[in-house]
Length: 490
Image 1: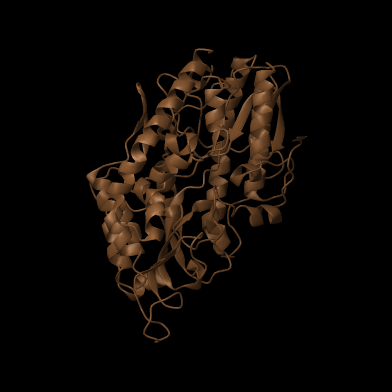
Image 2: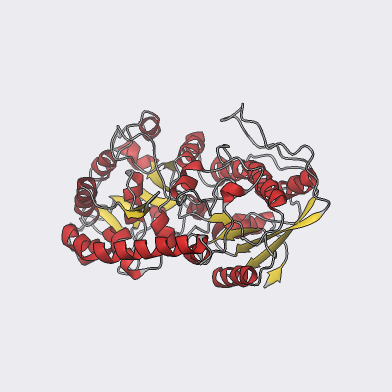
């Protein structure tokens, strides 16, 4: 295990921010120089609270922890690794990260210490520390799946609701994601601006949209009219045999291209569906409905039609077309993967994933999230709560700098995409089963149901679900029982 801060130059940061939350390998634009102003050395960053101007910041008056160390543990994974630095470089994202910790240290008189490791080793180190009763780490970041279940079933976590100085209704916390992870009256995992989540979104090719006189996509989003049916309608209308060989393939224009391995699962999230829910009685399987059947039929009909879509499953197909080749109207991607398009000449915009219909209240995205948690062995909950709350609040400036760099000149070319990014981030959600059981083979059969069926050209989703249902329900029941026993100290 190494205990160190990470030095990130502006150049290295620019190269590395494209890494996605779970898997985004698309080659994808260097635009003009970013316009976000760099933060001068030592200057305090004030988070942008325009969306919640009247919400009070954390009250730190009278809080002084005498220079005590606060130890963070985090896996070297996703965007977690690239939002910490120990020096100012003039790059707005780098300097926002530097000032975030500095502001917390100055306000509370603490000293931050960062510990980095691999997913597995991070998880093992924390569990060993808790088993030994050591207050070695106060704030722990997690992979979206790895360790999530073990921490909770092992009784390793402090109930976040019991931390002093925290306000989870504040706009710097993701209330919707945390509510999804509440188990009864307990909350073991937090999410908010202190983590750069890599939400799944839609990218669209502006030139193709204009060539076919499609409606203004940004207005569709603003008016609540960007729906899955519209996505399928427009995507089905732009097929063109570019090379004139009479066959539609990766050399021709279609409505969609991209990896569908995880993205086919995300379609359910876009449309407001979940696989599992935590209730006061346990963990419930909520996947099956007439709506899910309808979505599967529509999804299968479009994405499995090679004359309409160049979507592929990376474990099955090798002949792939990239969105950066300019031959597709749409692709689904993670926000963290967008900077990979910097070398592309495609003029594209960012949209949220399409809603199920106009009546769906909000646009929704699954960010394949990272979480933060607190070991049960902490000896100073007062300090830990104050640091966690202020650190999340101060992270708003980092989020703003990241979004500004991503949109204004560095990756995309329009202000509307910055507006869309706000909408995407407001609609983050997650599935508790997807994180607790993300590596469970029986759970995969339902959670990744679309991906399990489509590459095999199997349209019988009802039969597939019936076979998979009971093992998953049993797994969920056992998981809940283990969590309850851990809470009871058994």
